Image 1 (tube, rainbow, N blue to C red):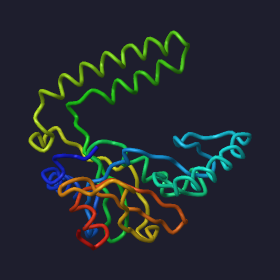
Image 2 (image 1 turned 135 degrees about the vertical axis):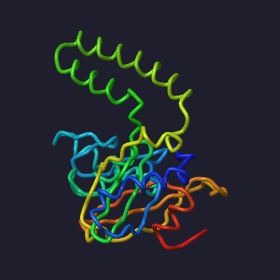
Image 3 (image 1 turned 90 degrees about the vertical axis):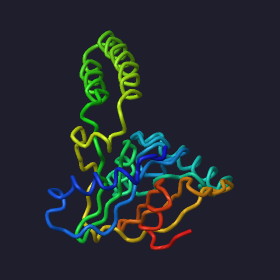
Length: 230
């Protein structure tokens, strides 16, 4: 989902990024997110990005060949030869809300604004901790998670946007790689879906390890990353 407050939040990201930049020049700052429809094509991962067993990989290879022949890989979001490839790390990072793709003179990264007033992440960690015990523990954790999610949704609807509450904002780095790991960024358009003025835009980020990931951004982000405007 596109961030409707991306333009307003960009100034907040820049103001909080000084310590992380460590004196490096900020070259590109673009709002980033995952595709609305996605599929992984990474050796060792299934279509949803989960690790696969060796016995499943042959079947997945046959399925991938058929899907590519039928749909030309239209909505492949990540492609790579290993779960540790740069594209997997990048795409996993932009799944968070308030995520930004950043290029500096020395690094490429995904930074995200975390709302310290939100309690959702704490509920998620509690669920994971309880699930490590028993089935009963997992169910109790799930119940708490659902309740916390409903409570947090109600609270979030009452809170002003994060850029209006800068004291509640915290900047986290979810992905980072050397600048030389970035090979290229090009425009990408979802087939058969028109691009509307002010609507989402997409880019394909290539790394020197041969992997690539497709990201959703906005018009300003696409222009900043590719050097070309609509």
